[in-house]
Image (cartoon, rainbow over all chains, first blue to last red):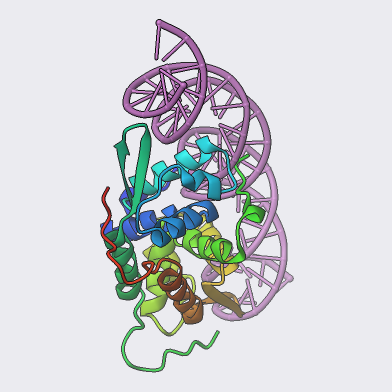
Length: 111
Length: 111
DNA sequence: TTTTTTCATCGCAATTTTACGATAAAAAAT
DNA sequence: ATTTTTTATCGTAAAATTGCGATGAAAAAA
């Protein structure tokens, strides 16, 4: 165990979950926020902003990249990362479409 | 380790991360979608829809509840769960505000 | 009262996540 | 050629997650 039974769920559910999971850590949220602010893509300056060790930040960047939320290219010694706006938009879209209230009736809950 | 250094990050980052983390599993996405569809709040019928053991579904519901995405009440023998639309809206809002492109300049990335 | 239904919780095992220091690897600077 | 800078990766440890069966607990049905 410890592993999600991804095959048991729809591709959509898995896709949304993967994107959400990538955002499920404050460091990764902070990194993505940083990348959103500096539209010139930052490099190792991220490490200075995030209160974690360099290796840990690198690991988080790798996860964001694996999830498609970030892209990166090597530029000489430095490494350049960029936010992927399309992936963020995709996340927003899925949130809207997946969890739309059913019908136009009363959506209040009796709980 | 294995623990996030939550104190090192802003409340906003932690809040967004917590909500995203709760959605970071396909079963929880499926459960929330189910609750969104049946605006009359479902109870143990969720277990029939989710391809996991009853105890596991119960655990996922507990997590969704802890994150505030779901509310639940006991109704006799049965247990009733409801989606929390406000929390979902909050997540959407945070996604929009946190990751808004900086300025109105060129947002294209050179990466 | 006994049995059944419905659900939460406990205990466990396998795996993943988080975090760090140490170490590579490769370009740049000296 | 050597040193420094920058970043990725490896190895490790602690903790969290995922999942299940078994076991409670409490209302409902018999």
